[in-house]
Length: 318
Image (cartoon, rainbow, N blue to C red; front, side, top):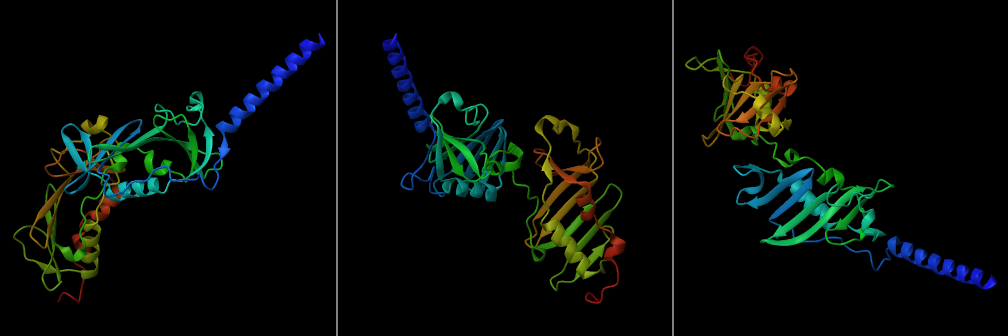
């Protein structure tokens, strides 16, 4: 009996030792020598990346900058600054702890390929890195990460979810126009029943015409310059989800807004009513039916030309 007790005790101690050894291997603080960059690649070599957050987002670097593949028939300018930030933050990702080597626990940290955010970097047709971003650590300053193909789950310094875990439309370039005030020559507001034109001549004097063919009159230069600045930096508030694009109709637009730059090029966008709500309007560049942009009503109303206000007395243009 005593011998059996000794044998059972020895087995228990051995099992405990194995368990503690496993736990020690599963979670340990990396030494100063072992703390290393999780990923690094020359940003100039990265020419495409794919991000799966619910659905896949495909981005690539084209001749005109970063582009996003919306679908098989549509490529749209991507937010290059956001992509550069994503590459920079990834290059600076440093590991602090090895949390687990147990594949059954990947879902606990949401670093499995179903629940986690999968990120793939490519350069010249070759895969540079593939990893999964999981949830935020308990201290709210780290993120769980795992390389694809590895069972090792690490804590990485930083909160990366705000950079990568967002819908595809968030990677689209929201800039409608990108002009400085002195790069614009004329703006036209074409409503269903009238047209207003605002121009800036070579002397920097702003003039307004209420309808085509009518005389140009000097207007308030400060207010006109503010209107040029607002329109020149116009950007979408958001994008209409693809499954709801049928809700927008531009057959009878609220407004056709035309911008002429100093080189004589014209760029026109169309605005349409959102019949479901009064807090926003739809907007698209003429000739590009998708994706459909959204502009909040408050911002849209600021774009409109109040000719009576613009025609207030102004001594600089007389």
